[in-house]
Amino acid sequence: MRLSPTAVGTFSGKLVDLLDPDPRQVDIAEALSKSCRFNGNINAFFSVAQYSVNVSTDVERATRDYEAAYAALLHDAHETYIGDIITPVRVAVDAEAVAAIERRLDVAIGSALGIDIAKHKSVGRSADVQNLYHEALRFGSDAVDPASRRWVPFSFRPDPHYAQPLDPAEAFTLFMSRYRYLRRRIFGEDVSAAFLRRVTETAS
Image 1 (cartoon, rainbow, N blue to C red):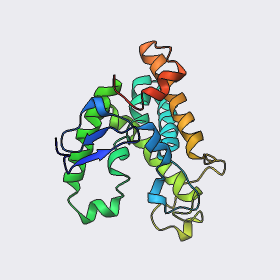
Image 2 (cartoon, rainbow, N blue to C red; image 1 turned 180 degrees about the vertical axis):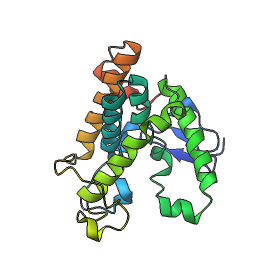
Image 3 (cartoon, one colour; image 1 turned 90 degrees about the horizontal axis):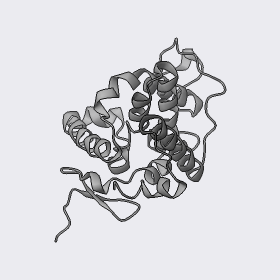
Image 4 (cartoon, rainbow, N blue to C red; image 1 turned 30 degrees about the horizontal axis):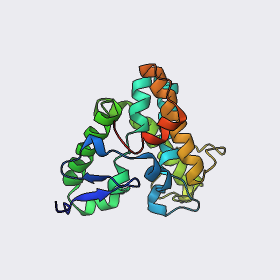
């Protein structure tokens, strides 16, 4: 069988077709822990995995809704397969076509991991934006001094103690720990350490 030109290979050797993603091929945590926010255009490595944990934690703190926090943990998991498509790129190309691919991937990931990501997306929007601003100021994508800022709102006040960046291995562990905690809260699962690694390689 010939490889589809729209298929993306994963860390564990699986293939995810961007136009017809199969939940059985979902494999996310390893790639997210190695993917840098802002396409790497910041002054330190800060992974999508660590950012996702921060958003998820903020959503739980604000709502006490474990399902919303779980969806927030996975809200950018599609970046495993298409990368972080930043806003300028979306403006320059067909943004709806990009969004359609993201939606298909979100459905496949949600089906594999037991959550409707789209259903909870609006709940996590505020936490998503707040973390984006914190990251921009913490890692040099915009200026801390309000008078010199290019896009972060002048009124935004950064937390001087915002997250210490983790290396990919540490980010992977953090992401999987958060995953295990939320699965236990929502589904009552006592997920073993062995399964934590396996769930990144298979949807079964």
